[in-house]
Amino acid sequence: MCNNECDAATEELAHPPELMFDIEGRNPTTFWQSTSWKKYPKPLQVNITLSWNKTIELTDDIVLTFESGRPEQMVLEKSLDYGRTWTPYQFYATDCLDAFTMEPKTANDLTQQTLLDIICTEDYSRGYVWKNDKTVRFEIKDRFALFAGPRLHNMASLYGQLDTTKNLRDFFTITDLRIRLLKPATGATMVDENNLSRYFYAISDIKVQGRCKCNLHANSCVFDKGKLGCECEHNTTGPDCSRCKKHYHGRAWSVGSYLPIPKGTANISRVCDNAMLRCQNGGTCHHHQRCHCSPGFTGILCERARCQGPGDCDDQLSGQASLHHHPIGHQRTLTLVVFPLLFV
Ligand SMILES: [Ca+2]
Image (cartoon, rainbow, N blue to C red; front, side, top):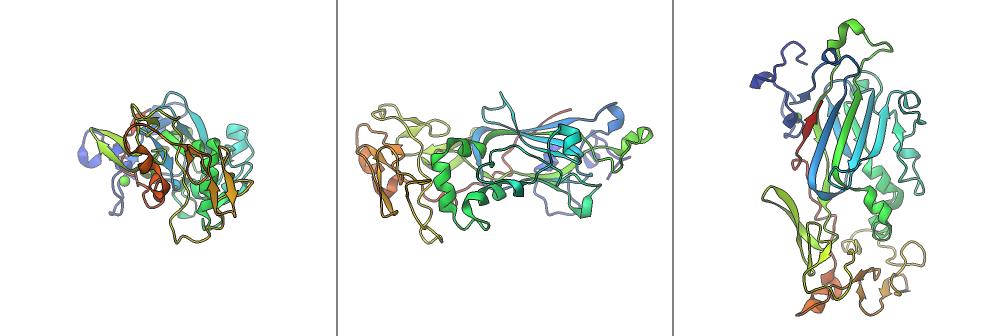
């Protein structure tokens, strides 16, 4: 660390926020470093806000790599409305009861029924660089595994759930993330009041992987005029393809379907059943392999009304062409598309 050499005004000695989002792999690592506790009587707190200005569906764990000790208290928060309102995603502390009056839990304690619970974990706060592990994670994949199995071998089951359960879909969806660093690592039970310059935060990398939320009405998401946007198909429009195009309002807009996942993927055991993968809008399930939909509805689970209008809308929407090909294959890695703002 550069305790005595940091200087924001000198390029070689500065540690600006951008260094959390450059490409790692070089040696030494590049990192952002906060000011020390010395300048902020109590406590040293920093917010890091990441805004995409676009709705994003997370597809992998969020991973923060600390070059300082991992914080003793921290909250990861999310917004779904471009930063107007925030809700906690996960609490992190060396002592959850003491810091947040919460029982300590881990992602492994979660079940299908408690997946949406917000937990406090002590897994990522122990010690000053505990066993050399410098990362703090938000475990997306462990949560996916509750529906898709331990090695995510049954993604069809997960996507079936995402299709039919809005709360679950929203849980993995964000427009912004906020990391609230509440107490730096001290490495001891008592804070050394005479040596507060020892305490600070330093982060070398923040990984957020996801894909644009296009409601499964687009195959690609492009960065245009400083903004991410879906390239909408199926006569839909809007930043998330969440509206029918003008003159295509014959039927209500509806979200697309995640199913079926790509042919050849293992364990497409069933497409529909009478429990979790129920055919919707009056559709009926045949041999667990397909839904027979009522007129005017389409999608694997008949969950989607058609955007009807002039021209060949119906043709475009029939059969496989109406489905979003393989969300997995088209997921976007957004590690560089972040605009961190730093507030101390
Ligand atoms: Ca870096």
